Length: 147
Image 1 (tube, rainbow, N blue to C red):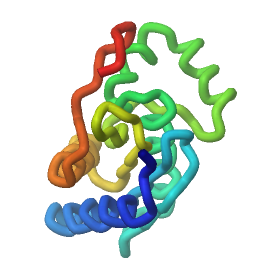
Image 2: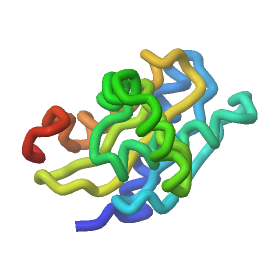
Image 3: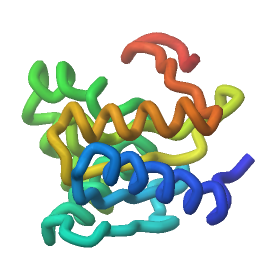
C-alpha cells in the first residue's frame, strides 16, 4: 500500500482547514515511507521557515516510524547519538510535537508534519486529521515490536 498524491492532498487540505479554525497560518508537509516529499503547502501568512520545519517533522515521523513526540526521551537520554542521526539523514531528525507517522492497517505509509501553531496545536492538528481520515495513531514504544 502506498500513500497517493490524492491521499496526501486530502490530508493537507484537512490540516489547513484545521489551521483556519484555530486561527493559525500553518505549513503542512507529507512524505512517503522513505521520507521523500509528496507535497508541501504553506498557508497565507505562515512564517517563512515553517515549510522547512514541517518537512523535517514529516521526514522524522516517516523514517523513524514513530511520531516525533515519541523521540523526545531518546533525544534527551542520548543527545550525541541523536544529533548524529541528522548527519546521516536527508533532513534533520526532530524530537518535538507536530510530526506524526501515517499508518494504515499496520503499515507505515509516510509522515505528516505541521508547523505554525504552538507545538500542542501542531500535534493536535496532525492527530485529529489523521484520526478523522481513518489512519492509525497507536505506535509501540521504542524497543518493542511494531504495532
